[in-house]
Amino acid sequence: MALSRILYFYLWIAPHVLLLAVAFLMLRRGLHKEFPIFFSYLLFDFLQFCVLFTIYWRDAWASYVTVDILGRSADIALRFGILQEMFESPLAHSVPLRRAVARTVNWVTFSLVILALMFIGSIYYNSFGHRLLQAYLTTEALNTAQCGLLVLVFLWHRYLGLKIPPLVFGIAVGMGLASSLEPTIHAWKDSLAAANSSVPDFVQMAIYHGAVLIWLYFAQVREKIAPDSNAVSLLPAREWAADVGRVIHL
Image: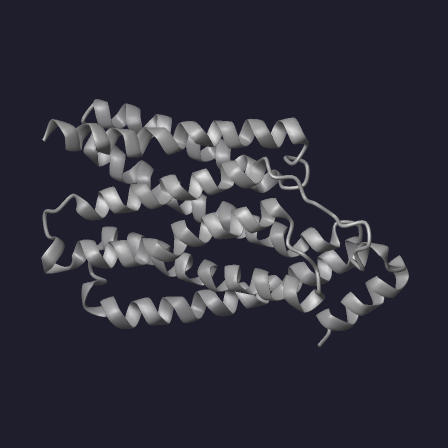
């Protein structure tokens, strides 16, 4: 019992402390300027952990649930901003194209959110009378939509013929782990087999721990560019911009 409690606190505390290490690496390498929303997300998650940890020790469970829901909502909003940063990263030096991509991503995001809400609602429609459950199911629907956008990030870079920068790849993989498996974990918690079990919580925290370690690793990986590479950066800027504009308007 004591060992499981120690493991629980380690899996809860360790990844949030490592968030500061990721933020420090980004600050040291100047990556916070390229991905300001992801940098803000790291700091916000750490501060949110500090607040929740304080509430936990004071046994204020009603406040804990409220802060947890508000924190999850803010996390989801920040993650949508991070996804937009990843879509716009190949177009860092073209403001008009970035705006065009942002409009397209907004429409795709809206469509995916509606589909996710319809899917989650069809599964839990008998339970929507409980307001607390409504809040958590809505966040899971938004997490599901974000998983679809993460897949599109990889397809977007592949379609443009661009190599994904290490940090973008790391952010996408880490977010994919945290977002895609969270609805599954909550479904597991709701199942009869996992009733009154702490195993799903351990698994969820272990997954988040892995996601933070992935961010930490890729925050320090430097991109290698081969000298004989035929990368897009070697193409004339005007020709490359025209090609990307054609892709966006397809």
